[in-house]
Length: 60
Ligand SMILES: [Zn+2]
Ligand SMILES: [Zn+2]
Image (cartoon, rainbow, N blue to C red; front, side, top):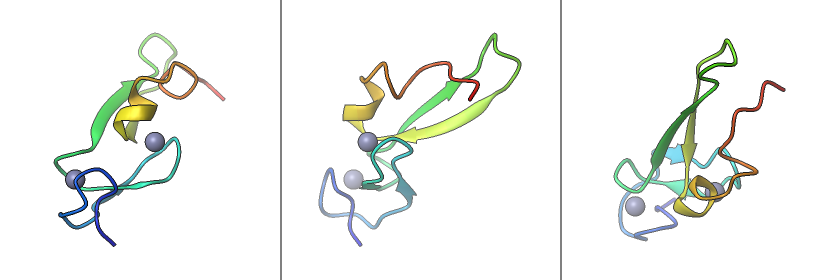
């Protein structure tokens, strides 16, 4: 499976929001939970990275 963004490189991550494949260069890291007692790394595509419903502090 190739990256959904550049369509060239091999998939390394799956978007935590929408599940699209991402390579190591196209993935956006987000660490949410700061101030919530947890540190939970997310691997997000650019769309989800900008989506406040996905990229947020969500203790659930
Ligand atoms: Zn890529
Ligand atoms: Zn996504």
